[in-house]
Length: 522
Image 1 (cartoon, one colour):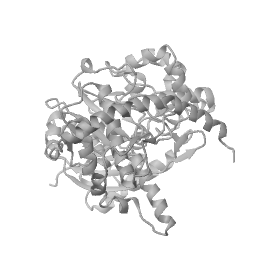
Image 2 (cartoon, helix red, strand yellow; image 1 turned 120 degrees about the vertical axis):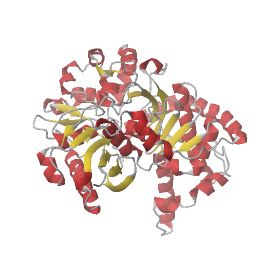
Image 3 (spheres, one colour; image 1 turned 90 degrees about the horizontal axis):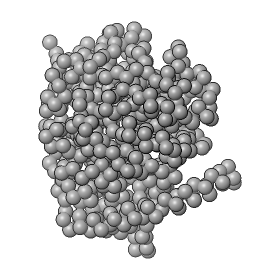
Image 4 (cartoon, rainbow, N blue to C red; image 1 turned 90 degrees about the vertical axis):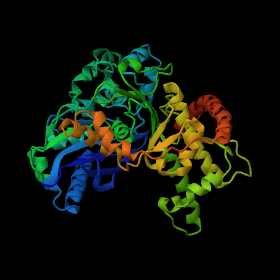
């Protein structure tokens, strides 16, 4: 008899992926298609919920058709996806509106109002998570004041992965990560009435679905979803944790012996430290960052850069525009070939870059929806690859900025995400952090983490630590050590990086006011 297979569904911001794994962690197949969302005036970013479900069905069917016989071996489906956002459905389970995703910045004023209120300290102390514009709690506050008709038609507020789980099972639920860091008490992992009161969302509390721990409980594939997917009705479906926590599992953060740090360098930058229990969670005076539960007793504390590889994408697209002036067409992938060597050959510290390229501002290790990217210290000798290296350095400085808000920098950093494949990025990060950096040779850490939760829930492993031993430990790469000379240079530059960002904050605010006054003008 052939071994069972687990399929992880990872609905990300850029790509919707489904990945098949053997029960021992070996990846055996994958299918994907680009995700789609739209930008709106005023900072909106929305995703068609119906299309998202259709894309998930299409990609799952693609995977099953690509590997004959796979459907008969599927033991369970596990779901994860992009975090934050607010996806409203009515009593019949139909979308009330397109889903608001984490890139939506319309709730920026709600963030400012909360930060200036006496309730801010209470919210942070209970949730151990700072308030920012991408979260369901601030988006619901905005809707309550600006678009009450949306809430009038809503029965349930879901996150993106919760919507997919609902379409697979018919069950309205959220996980212990997103439900708790948004509206709950991190110590008890349950909703907190005091948080709803502090948010002025008591009347909306009924929109929140039950918190379901996928490490303990599985749903069942509905007849309608089974027919659409050509799978067996009743197949176990596990609601995984939010994608960043699944990536933390698949990427090796959950290691009580080493207690490493971990950076996920994808579209966003996530920088995490391991906390063995609620007692080890550290709050910070800036009231920023996230605290999320692992299955069991442990936690991940994290600071999140709103944009990581989005900064590199922006630079590469500028290069493509220049090449297009000469009628030369190149893709981002084309430009990435050989880029590491050119970046490492460029001058260190030729410029200072603050990587706040997202239109939603920044959320870690400070919250400011007006924050914007900038180069500082340019002169006529600064070349393109000097600028590009400074972007890599800016990402590393942003990572250190985040780690310092979490406490002492861990003695080892594990990295995953697209930029983790870059030797230049790993070497610069190691020098800035003065810590060895190890990549995890797991291409799809998010889907793997969701499936690890499923494998434990289904009894294939007795606990998470034994699963990690099979799924993660063998995939850790050798460490990239810190270059002492470069680390000394970066030590001085990092302090300039922090001083510059403090000095720029009032400038960002003034720029935002100027831009808001010119919107819609020719």
